[in-house]
Length: 287
Image (cartoon, rainbow, N blue to C red):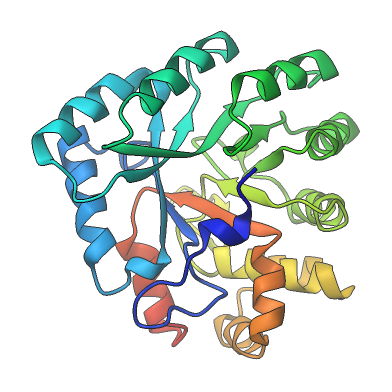
């Protein structure tokens, strides 16, 4: 199976290892909801832009795969788009979607398959995931959050060799995990020998509260918290911090070896914009 390290090939201009391929392109998803032509054009522009080293995979729902292929036939990308296929058609739809992608290898390179888990995340379901997803493709499974059962589901996903997904926000308050929940998740994952992927809600580098009074986790908070989780320090303080200067200093102090270790755990997150995280990172002096 592909690894988090393989997905983070160094980008141009020596992108720092803590940030290489950090941001997966989720332009098609809320709140961006880009049209397919705009999403494809934005991704191709981003791949050759100044900070292309920060950009990771292109995320596409399985239900929109035909639309994506139609658009790529029009624009003729110079090399295949590295794709994460987000399964919104049920587990039974995976084999057909994978087959379609593999039949279009001049346009698409399948790197990852992501899907929500059923409430119980049982072994039979996880085995079917393994059967349906090729061995060289990363499997990302999102257990439903809530209570101790959620962390049990995360452990089962890890034991199965898949990456767990952490949803960090959404359209209602219930979609935003607490600091304690994220800390507990990191505790399980950092000791599990596998990477995780984050999704939704990570719009800014540093923790903040929006106009709807939703408090968003910051992706820099999550990077620093992952580093602390690996070294046995205070994870909750890092997650709860709104001190951009202190978080930036801590991130800059990480050695390349420590940064690679962090990204071996926190592999990437989906964002409907590349420009917003890059602007934050530039403003903080991290790019």
